[in-house]
Length: 55
Image (cartoon, rainbow, N blue to C red; front, side, top):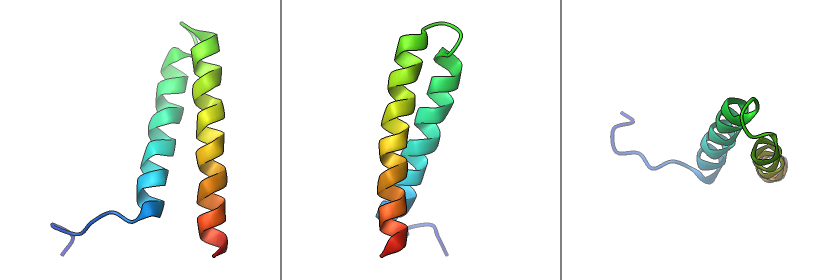
């Protein structure tokens, strides 16, 4: 039962990564500079996810 289960660090990072990419896609036609900043932030999180998976 997953009703009261806490999210692991990996799940939290994956959620944040997907949110950043989604927001970057929305902004890509309106504000390219902000979109690029969000993509860079998402890439940092991607590196953290890879580091967690290597453990």
